[in-house]
Length: 235
Image 1 (spheres, rainbow, N blue to C red):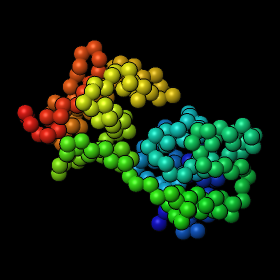
Image 2 (image 1 turned 90 degrees about the horizontal axis):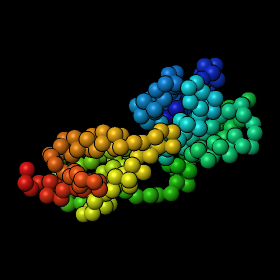
Image 3 (image 1 turned 180 degrees about the vertical axis):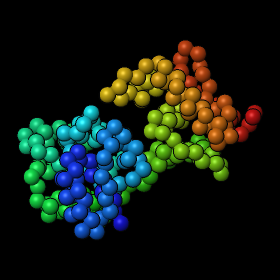
Image 4 (image 1 turned 135 degrees about the horizontal axis):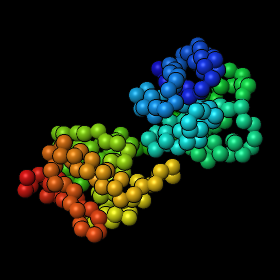
């Protein structure tokens, strides 16, 4: 059963949407803690998101950008805003469609079905999953997983991004500026300390799969993978 996540701060509208969605055979969940939207998203793993624009703390545009860092699932904005610029902003920030309030439930269901078909059904483009391999190491960027031989460890999005850069640059050094740019978030300033913290986390993930010392510091330049550690030598 396909899962729909409803991010709407009006309880009546959210419950109305949920009742109608479930009537048509979809599973659904309503976000009720708007300080932890992404935690709910990660736990529920929806196939599609219905997203309001006017939300507490951060607006729907912000949350759509956060979702896009982790998933390509369809996002349909539902909002009382009717201006053309609002619809442009929704699409520019990663949305797939836009429905204005008040809405007819049949329109919502039709758009949900349309987006699900495009993403997963008969109209979906079949794309092979990316896998980066290097001497027995496999990085699955979309799955956020690192494997070495018979060991595997989950990754955060930032950890996966850093490991991807290290693999792509190997055997060259991945410069600090390049890695900082990789971590850059348009809502957050990323400084040297942020990079240091994330490199430490990456090292711990390598250690979890038996690769202590896999990331070398090249003083004044950046970081480089130690291929002997990937091969399991010199440990």
